[in-house]
View 1 (cartoon, helix red, strand yellow):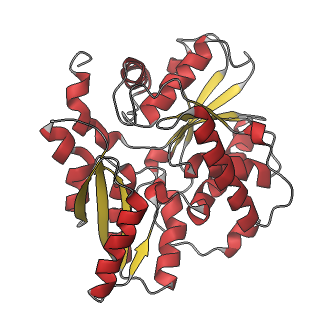
View 2 (cartoon, one colour; view 1 turned 45 degrees about the vertical axis):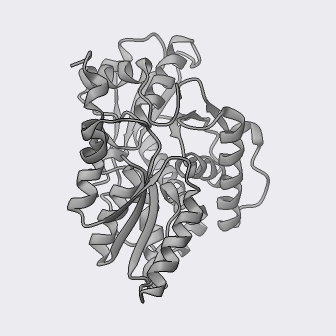
Length: 334
């Protein structure tokens, strides 16, 4: 596949496990449940951004960059993994953290991923919620250039066509694992946020000629806007791979029922999902992405969305470090 012509900088432990969730499955009537453990990528507590950063860091080094420059929310998993990737590659890291969530919690402001960002050596810049982040990133890049630095700009979530190649590669990895485990046509379920993971999965399924449904669970935008965002990025990924033919718009779905009051704002269904998976499978989800995505999958199971003989694979994109920044949200559960 054309993906092999793109250079990568080794950051992760591959392949990540594909494991059954038999005890969680026992709570529901319906399909066999599996989990793709991309929380086990191995880079500074793991997560999905590691796959994207292998392509992005390779490009940064090829361009002679000395600094990775990116942005995210305060408890950003992406910023943590970018800081770790920069450390491993011998680069500096600077990141903008947007105050998207109104919280006076000291834990949210300085624990969890923020604490790890600092340990990993990132220089952090706080900005108010609603700041146009790409424009702000451009301004910071200009200041660094004026100071003689050579920054490489990475969009939020690493979600551009090059970064999304990481999840085309994930589909190729999954195809081998599914063949080995006798899973002929899995239904993939993923959180859908900055769009890179969701778009990469959709593009990978299309590029490899697989007839696998991919269901996204939105964590920020309304359904129509999120689906358009994912479709647009997936189409660009397929162009990058020189895959012919249109990607059907109807193949992109992003259920927005589990966002709640907004990005990163805890919901009752998220807390139920986090505690249920922890206590049935010993697996930690996160409060922003995988907790809400799992809440979506649980609702699909309760609604009879999947056939009894179907196999469902939940894509665990990591992020459990953020739980420490959200301890205040789980006081009733623990």
